[in-house]
Length: 247
Ligand code: SAM
Image (tube, rainbow, N blue to C red; front, side, top):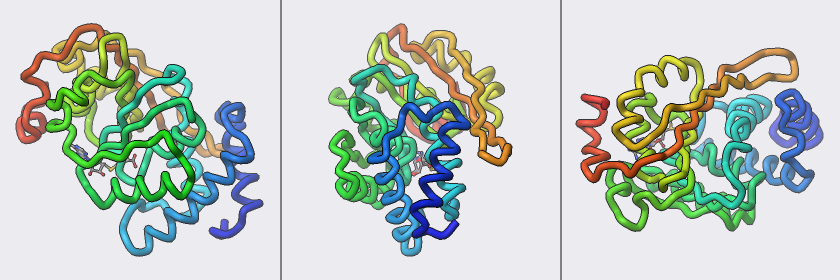
């Protein structure tokens, strides 16, 4: 598909949404925003590496549908922190289709966070707050610690590490929604100790592959961990320790 083919983009997006049972999320105004986002991201990508996925139909499937497949798991009006938001996934797709969510997009790379801020302005998304910093440091700050109804992350780290980076942000009664690809089940099995130590409850796993209109499938699992106890102040540890000795 050519980058300026708006009809082709709209048709393929609608087909993909239907195939994945997501069509009720989207209006024509949303699709216009996704088209603008694609053009903008792929243009910026020529100067500054944001994504290795450059073909619009792949962007639709592997970035947009993949980011939206768990959109219904975020409660109405929730505050959300997207840890390691990178080029804005899942932040930007979620912010477009769920204007009720208030999303903080956290990443340690200032250039990516600036890109998210500029893109939110371009798309007139008022529900995104960009934030530069390392999750393990920001989570120690009382302004952010246990202040979010939901934490989410996609393609940042294996679940035992990711749980330590994300669960400290979640308020009691809130949830951590991890978007994983292949291997989500095995990662969850390896995370039982970490989840319990960090105040999480036994997790639910949703196996929901992304389905392409031509029948191709891409692995996607969503892990949902409810926060049932406060996280002990010693977590998260310094990143070196988290990575070297996951809980
Ligand atoms: N979530 C995006 C996506 O799905 O396309 C980006 C994934 S990218 C592979 C991982 C991102 O996580 C990078 O932008 C990196 O800077 C960020 N990151 C990794 N560790 C982090 C940490 N401890 N705190 C904040 N950001 C982190």
